[in-house]
Length: 527
Image (cartoon, rainbow, N blue to C red; front, side, top):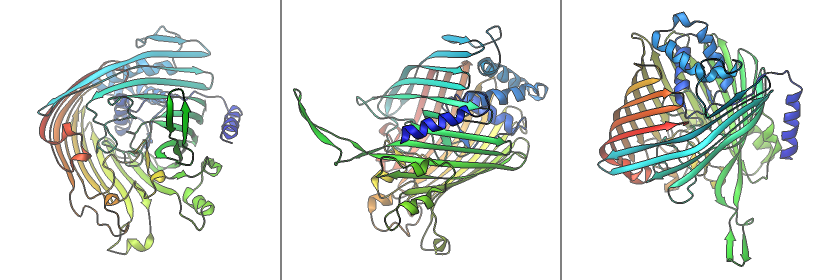
């Protein structure tokens, strides 16, 4: 059934007007994302920033719009624009005779293009707790042929000790561990694009919700999972995004697990329960540079696959009530995001994740709905060029992102897909960024994060659990971060952070626990 529906989607794409390939740009390469955000906030073009990744063609188009207004950019912005056009100029410039970045392999003619580059790098931490090293190696490639796009990257990671386990409250990336300190991450996909949208089968990272210090719809720090993506942009004031994904439940299905006996002996082969997610987002621009987005998702299990959740425009909670009438439902969510760049140099945004909503609870002081909300602003290049001020507040009520059925949690590979602090938490984040050179940044930041009791550990009623009744974990950090992209995709970074983390030690890597000063330095190519 899945194969038939996928083939039908691809055949439908063939009937649409020819356009461009869809090749997503990795969200971990944040430099160009920050630059585009800055240009949009300064008023050079409109930007719907609720969903990442952007495609290479989207990025290229926005850079071209800025290039048409080059005289209005300051000197550093002009140099940074030229820097990124050396890479994203590939999307529209012909041949090789232009100021193009250096790649391990690059080819382009009037029908086909391909880029191949290595991935290599590492970072080192030092503090009173000792030292930590992390290195990464691999390769990536992407290609375009007509309306078809292809991309793939393989990254092997080695980190000792591990800093990104599922139980830790951290934005740091983790993965399924192979040999105690190693994990690999395979990303890639195939797509068919046209002038106003695309359909794609990908294994790739996503981030939903405007933010500058951790999204609270899809946070983007989990291991990647397979998705069937659809994007439609029929008019410039409306955009629709949808994906259907296959998650890893990490819950053993005893009915499908079995014993294997051969010359090596007898072994029990475990099989996980199947777990899926469907999600959509409708984005509208009612006024110039104001985007309002709303959507919903559902995490479901117990089926091999359910075709109802392949219908992109459904409100999935209602569908769930139809197919699970009279029995326990699946796990559904709703989202709302508002982003305004109507005032030049100022980005205002707010996001709400609704895990469970009951109207009577709104008026009951002893019960609570399951919300996570975020609000913040960034002021760029005012009153001083190349300077930005960011302030962001996040609050999450108890049991948001959680579920009492292990196969229906808002997780994949045991990693929470929402905000990195999980439920029953609060965060203040303030940062001052200064960009003295192109693709370079100095950041001074302050972050105050707390988390209350984990009521899923305590058991009892799921209603009436007061938010932050007690502080079970507290992390207070201030620091300075330096980053510079010397050439395209060659990054240098360093930081010095004063941190005090108290409370439940199991929620923090041992290395970062307690009162300490941490120095970090790294160099990488391709990530």
